[in-house]
Length: 222
Length: 222
DNA sequence: AATTGAAGATTGTAGGACAATTTACATATG
DNA sequence: CATATGTAAATTGTCCTACAATCTTCAATT
Image 1: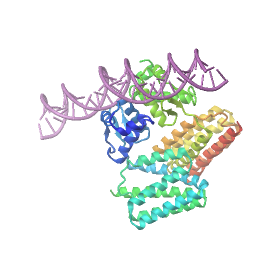
Image 2 (image 1 turned 45 degrees about the vertical axis):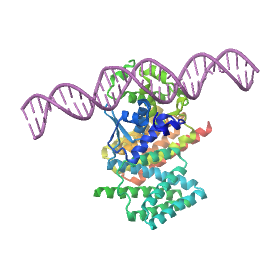
Image 3 (image 1 turned 120 degrees about the vertical axis):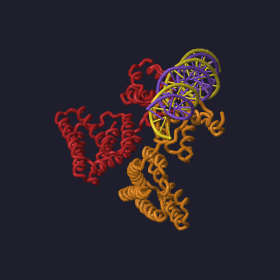
């Protein structure tokens, strides 16, 4: 009976709300990879009993954000560079499917929206507005996956994205790679606009694989 | 304190064991899609309290085998043909990645094992032993995914396979499609043996997509 | 036959309890 | 001084009971 936000939204079940909240806390960085998550602390934080919290943790474990070690508790998952690379490989193929599906079914409106994202990113590059670029970049990817109209694909893709956020993401995108990246976006979007499924598929896969290589060559240096 | 199998294996946590057991029960068909799962019934069946059972159900929900409706309980998930088709599309791309990865790294031993599976399926076809074919077929797919050496890929692929088992799988593979299917296996395995990543990728994807179309054309008729 | 309504069942959550295990810390030992 | 050891405290894992909220069932009423 403490956090009012939780009291108000009784439409969804308590464990779901707790799950979302813990997820938010993890992705925001308040809990860092490797941190132990204490159940009692969460009961105090949310004002609930341990039951709903343990249920939420179970769900989070399945989504790959936390890890449970019997009798020792749950820990925010720690992602090795190797695992991140594995995730990128899978993500590349899922994103390739998204590109293909969207190329086959994109409406004129969707194509216009996609081109809008690319233009916005061009503007962000011109203004050297890194944050704005990142936001639009994320929105473009999200849009493509959502409009591919395959909920299974969307769920798995989003799960991977979440997991990747556990990986240290510093220096992930440097100055000139914004330009390179948006050139790839342009190719992706125009392939979709041309309803060329094969070309879209290849462009989407290549885009993620190049992002993977940028990530790897950056982290090798540290 | 009833089921001895659960008492013995206290090394893993109780919710994990319960989860595995419920999953087994669902996949075996004892609980059918759409069935409601009663918590108290499970407490009697496993001799545990509701806590661990609710945790297990949470985990199963995340893996897509059950569906929770607030205040109404959990139900074995019902898969529409449309959803099955979506799963097949994703599976095709994941399997394509598995084929590519394995082509790049397959050892001679692994190649020999793969060829053994194909030969065994040829023998099963010759003997008209459908069950044997199905078993070897499953083993081949599992082997490829496991030896692709990408745990993220493996986890997502296996999750899809489990979900597909919720779909009515009658008349999924008819007589002559065994031959067709194993011809495709042959192409997959030889592409891997040649360490030809592109060819393996294409062959693996095509194999799943053809399976999808066989499924669809069969279910259209019913 | 359709609607209503009360009784019963089930879910969702709380909270206390306790064994088993792990962690932390202080003390003894080489 | 560093290491080993032992004890106390904390934490997890599980059970139990309880009860409000909601859903389901089924009989009675219109």
